Length: 387
Image 1: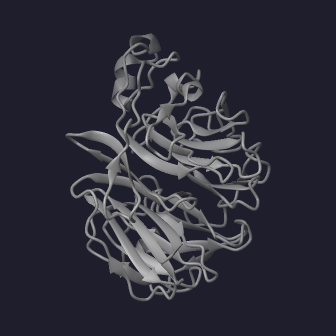
Image 2: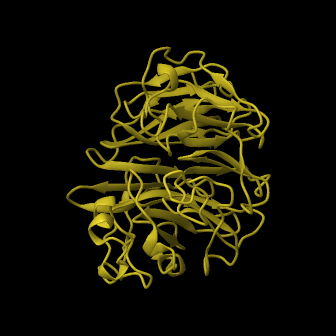
């Protein structure tokens, strides 16, 4: 059978599924999925081919759906993610304004219930845990499904973590957006929380600890706190799970020891410390990709020229990739809007918040515009299937 490449694009007005053969030159596009809904994330589970979608609507609220026919039809989860009770450690402040009103009197909001705002990410489980999926949500919470997305259960240990009541929302809200599963250790999971930092469990989610040593938080009184960093995205290659790359609000980092400490791989090597996405080459764990912005104040392309930065040595050096990308453009790539496929000549896909979808068929050397005039792009995922 011939292989087919699918690119799943979530936007704030619906989702789109682009498909092509492995040449990736001519693309077909589906009808809009979840028309007028905010599609935060669409992901294919490579274990069974089921598509999963995290969506929300200003009237109907947040939910998850799944499809067994590549997006022709969708079914809502029988039990969607919900926050069933107040956290034992107190509710996080929902905004800087709320924090200012209450000062540091956490007791004033401790017993107030939280409302699930949206699901940010759906991550398929390991090969060794069939039927398992994980979901990260806002306000920062982790959910697990053991029945292929039919029902979801809250991770109680993270929800009641002593730090949770002091986590602060970033510009996009208090979100748990990254879930990394260690393929070599079935008990180890990493989470990225904005703002909270990187947290890790070594007992399958029964307890969580912060892993943020040497990661800056320039907006805090102590620029190197134990937790409270604004992680924008993290990525790992399954062949080297102890190595994790992180794009942070305050720099680009790598850990070589499963998060025990982090190395700044952007300082003096990159023109900006600020960006959102990071992705790792599917076949080379030392090759990674980021898209930078000028700063946290000026969230636009560096020097007004859109680019993707690539490193082939784990971040020790970087090359600005621009061939085929617009020379004069002020674009933003959000945290979930960069992906790679798994073909031998890897494809890289980048979506912008002004509705452009760019792709490279040669690991980032050259780029083409795959689609334009889409709504603002929230997420991009790629999958290779047998047609």
